[in-house]
Image (cartoon, rainbow, N blue to C red; front, side):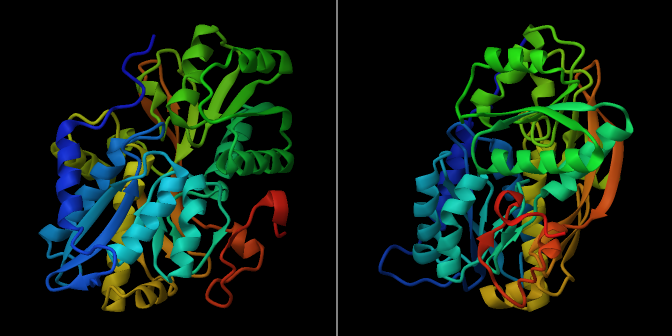
Length: 423
């Protein structure tokens, strides 16, 4: 049933390349000083999981592709971009250590981090305390409000809400079961699903949180079958949890649909598990979007030319690529790579790029991205087909709470669990 292994391991070539780049960027050591932008180069840090339960090599490859594209055009402000890649190893404590290393020892102009929300929250205060810029390009549960953190992935109002509206409008969900990972991303996202179900008149017949690393779901599947649900909303992460889909298909369930705003787009189960036809996913990018738009097609072709063996180009990979372009655009507007000036540029509402997913811009008041989001459905050939696209979706949650980071910097993650909806 499983067509390929769940997680593509880091290839020897990629590892060697990362080691070479990391060594090239590690000129400063503890106790020495180094400029983020000196001579003909500007150093940037990239924290990504290339090992551990959340490893995805496509993210690192996408970061490198964007850097290569920019360097081929002269870099940023005439300086070549020098990346320092570090492996978070899917370990929260390690992210704290790496953040300090990249800021204090390597003196990076900016750091990109594409790991889990738990990893982001573990190290975000390091950037705030040191007034350094963190860019987080991963889809997430929303609510981060910080001058020193730019979130360019989808929030719940940009992915969960469009998904729920699509399910309701197409009679795909009237009784929903929520199955989520048991940490801040899953918990807060599940609350958003609940809120939108209440708003749209969908009954939530069960909510279950699975600890990270869970790989056996027979009990969960039995609960789902007994619940009366006509759709399951999955918010599962990591290699172990995504074994759910194998077990779901093995159970032979055909009268309950599947929907997700993290699975398929992030962990591309449709390429690995036969029998997911009809599953719906919503995200800013899927590799199959290359069949529908020229910008997506060009990105897919360029990525495949450079990395032909990658299993799938995920939404996180596209997010990584786009985040580099957004930072470069902010530097060009600021006329410098210095942190405060670059953040001031983001604050103007004028940082916009034509990304593979569509137009992406950064909202200055919230430091969240305005995004184009597509809804896709798995067909009988295990390929995604486009069902709907919404452009320029606003990040509304923090604004609903009355937050403008340019006026006051909370340096906090807000959530409906603690802070309400702000309406």
